[in-house]
Image (tube, rainbow, N blue to C red; front, side, top):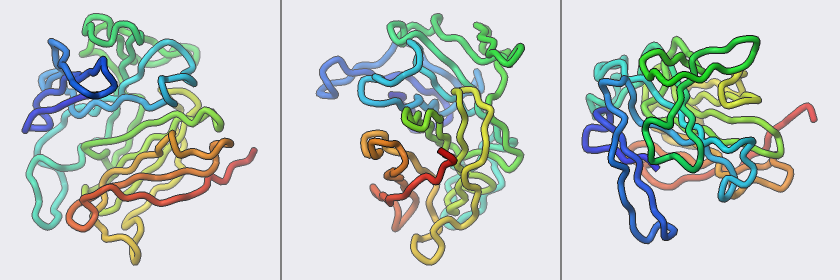
Length: 234
């Protein structure tokens, strides 16, 4: 997993455990704000990555834009804001080389519908764009039964329940919209949520029934979960 310091946007380093989480150590390198990277997100496959489609670990990177976003929520924290324009980049590394920074490659666009992987971090290209912005933390998981990647983020303004869920056949897209809403859960859930993720552990055997975990500020600053079902063409 990635660990940040007090300033969430300053740097992020990998924390790893070799004893199932009893103790943790840190990699000897970081992703930094100077590289325009904040809050990396590791794509979640099933237990032990058993249903991963290849031998790579994929990580989604939010490019740092600014401390000053459009947000104006109550009790605003200056450095917690949507990043505009909304861009998400993608890195990958072989599963046996996660602790080696020079082993990472970055999405550099496509050629004939195939991804181009580059080593120069400054030449990376986004795999996802939204002019309304993206949240300061996101989640991506792979549903092996539906064979789709699901990306969850917020938009427009943080801590408002502005949810966006998108899906794609590959880690780099192309992304289609599952739901794009303002004031998610209004009337049932206080409108201060900012983070959602699909727990692979609690997917039904056919991948269609899910548990959506979410959190927010104040009343929602906790472990929260709702159950739902994907409606598909299959």
